[in-house]
Image 1 (tube, one colour):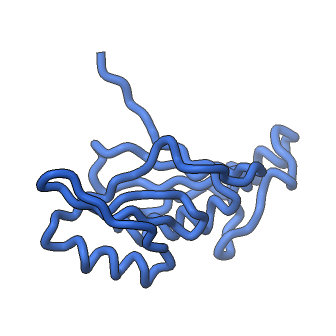
Image 2: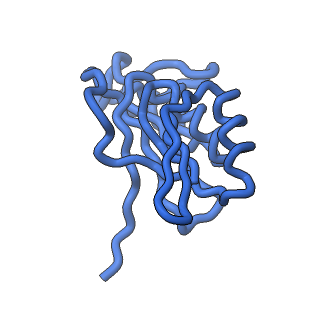
Amino acid sequence: MAFDFQVTIDCAAPHELADWWAEALGWQVEPQDESFIREMVRTGAASEADTTRHRGALVWRAGAAITSPDPHRPRVLFQRSEEPRQGKNRVHLDVRVGPERQDAEVARLLGLGATELWRASQGPYAWVTMADPEGNEFCVA
């Protein structure tokens, strides 16, 4: 039996982080339906406090998602969390670009606001561990 799944990342600023990761991966931020959000507030199913504005659009405060152009890849949801990040990630994303593109991709991500943490290798495999603007670790391999 196969299951569909998404990857969820807790963060302080989900809309900004979704924008950053969409740019980093070449994916799209999933649009949110303003008329649906307004209807939920109008009927009392949600409150104004559940919403915010991002890039001029009415969106749910709780989160934002990105999707790949390839429908077989999982959706990534950025979910608002009031708790600060503590310690090392227990799950992280690996951005696989191949050894011939690794340095260029690291440079591009640094230009977008990522931080390089360290480089490592095991046998023929080498990767660069980086952090996104909120400090979530990921690897470029």
